[in-house]
Length: 171
Image (tube, rainbow, N blue to C red; front, top):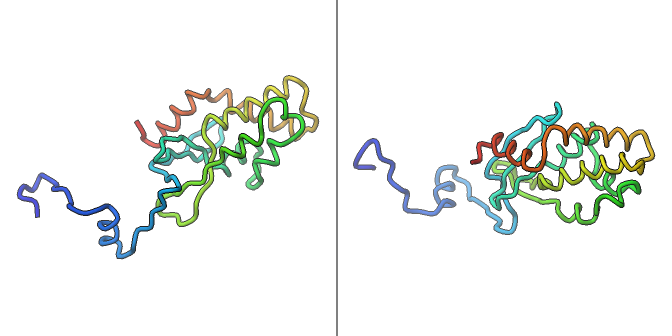
């Protein structure tokens, strides 16, 4: 018990032990997988995008939210949209696929997947450049490029990071 009522004394134990004592459940940590320290939602071009700041300092967008914002569909694999022939000159799809981050969200037992804010902007930029170059062949590809142009108009790399910081309360 603290000696002064307006002072909180430090607890002389590990975080895991304190949480375990409060919740009556063991805390399982995996040091190999990053975790979300802050989360929020940003509005880009009228689309709600889930975003996170990881313990590594990376600012990420939920992979499913990224695909949804590009395509307007609730499901789909990012690879299906970045490995198209018309984008090959504008983005390295293998590099993008290698930058997908699995991370933990406190309170959720299943790992989430996300992409760094910078990579999301690179994907949008590649689509817009491919559209300008006439490399996109289908109406669907052109529609995604227009969605990317709207997303890029809503923010730039630095702007996106600032929006994520603001949405999550991270300073």
